[in-house]
Image (cartoon, rainbow, N blue to C red; front, side, top):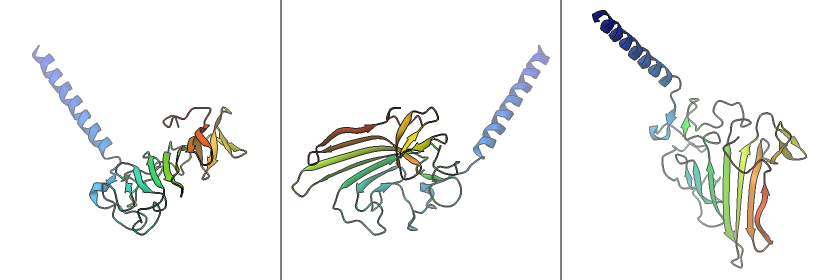
Length: 200
């Protein structure tokens, strides 16, 4: 019985040691720099912080909430114009740096956006000069690696339409327009494979 208990204790120590070393090894695979470190910078050389910046970007939350006319400007925005809310996932633009270039990662682990699972949504709204409101919403994904463009539309390897090509490697999954001036109302495009973002 004594030998059995000693053997059991040794076995438990071995399992504990293996568990600790395995955990430590996996934790050391990739050390990513976070926004909270104060060592990440935007394309204009400004340090990225948590919360919203002057332009409306909240990189930590993976979103933009501001004005369409100002979202890409290098100077502080003028708070007028059409409103824009963008949301995206880590593959589109991460909130950390794992490849050690002091910039937020894009399509980390993939040479391009294709096949990365990246997605983005844009929700725009505004008013015409006469005060008539309009809204526009779109879901965009990075095309799968095995997809092909035919006549300006992405098709999967199974031949099923994914959606219209946009910005080269991307496809529109869903588009909704509500604009009384043009007469557009409701869903103007919905992918035959469905508008869900997570499947890609």
